[in-house]
Amino acid sequence: SAAQAHKKLLEKRLAKEKEETELSRLKDLERKREQLEREVNMLEEEKRKRHSMEPNKEELIRIRKLEEESRKRAQLERDSRTSALAYQQAQLQKEQDDLHKLGISGNTRSQPTAAVQPKPQPNAGAAAANQLLNEGVTIVKLAVKYDNSKLYPEAYESYSKALDNFSKALSTGLVKGKTSTTVIERMDGYLKRMYKIEALVCGKDKRKRKGNFVDIITSMTKCGYNPVPEGEESFLQARLAETRKDPAALAYYSKGLEYLMAKHHACKAAGTATDKRIVESIGKMLDRAEQLKHSNFGRSTNL
Image (tube, rainbow, N blue to C red; front, side):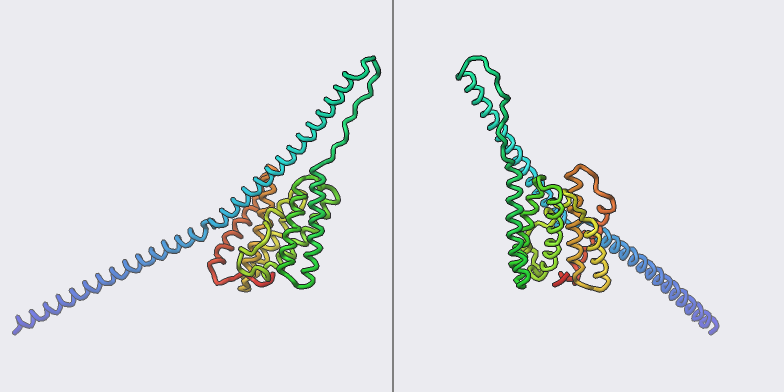
């Protein structure tokens, strides 16, 4: 009986040791599982961060397209001015040749000849610029009438056409001095009004948007306008709207980007480097705008 009791004691001890060993193994497995879970979470977090830092491909494509269109338009304007100058030079040369022939075939007696003064040629570029300005003034008067009558879609389209005319006039480089300053001031006011009524007319459908705001602001910037304060103010308004969960944040980011991108394009055209602070602001706004597009935020109905 003593042997049996001893045997039972040994069996109990072995069972207890086996149980403790199994428990220890299970604890080790649980620790390894938790460690693996933490590593997976860290990888997922790093992946999300990398994704959020990736540039908006659609926005980059749009920017490249805008830059290409701007280059093509500038080239067409240069070609037009070059053609007009070449035509004037050819006409002047033809008149001089005709006068020379007449002098030889006429009276051959030696007579003092008066200096031939070329006929003044009309400046085709200046005339075209003035025509664009006059047409723009006519259209914008109509836009203001529509606006006052609360016919916002018609006002929006007319503002867009007028701004396009003013922008083309500025792009000729022939609108200068006080006229240039006045045109830019008026354009600034009409542009801000377009931003105001844009949400009422277009809503969230960007296909209804009229005009190329970046090109318009760029033409103003090349003639002395500074778009940076307006762009930075829109950036601050967007940040404030975000803190209030206001869906207008996305519209403010879009507006700020257009003003700062115009400054970037103007610097590029002038062959100068864009201020590092502006480039950083553009990057931040692009990131935030992309994140808001995938959130529950929508475009505001009023800025």
